[in-house]
Image (tube, rainbow, N blue to C red; front, side):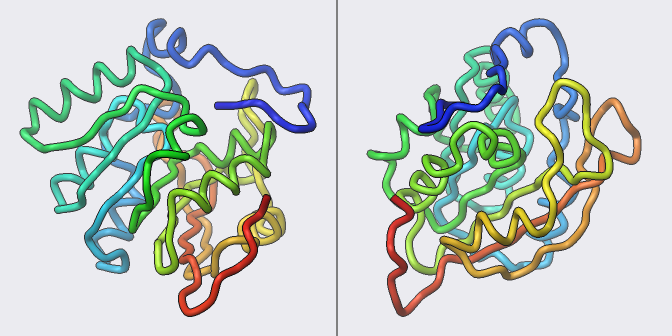
Length: 214
């Protein structure tokens, strides 16, 4: 994750240390239930896919098994090693990239689908403008963007505050049209029923060009 043009007092975690110390609270070992629900409905066409912050790869492997052409990026070497092992065991082709997403984006090209299982929730507190610019670079008119976002009802100690529906609409509508924004449960090994959150499916408009958020 990255810096801000107006830095806020949010300490950046040592992501690799978190994985080396054990199982992070977001790693269930299974694909996110909300991702599975949306993919199974056939809302998102198969195509080139970018996962922001893939962790140990459960979601990336699921998408690859479903027929998506997946590029999965993470900054934590330990997580990415586990993700590569998972993909190898499942026998699915995935392009794994060890890099800061912001450094990767300028030369990454554009994708038909961007999946975000928590990246926006964290980085919006650090540098929203840079995040929006990154999304602009890696999508094209017609691209889908799915974000799973923690809600405000159940803030977790040590992590950024939950996000309201108003904040989501205000921040992300600068680039995308909303396809569907609904409450959902965010899976966690620490809570059997998961945490309250938002499932935000969006699409970059076709037929005209919005002004870049920069």
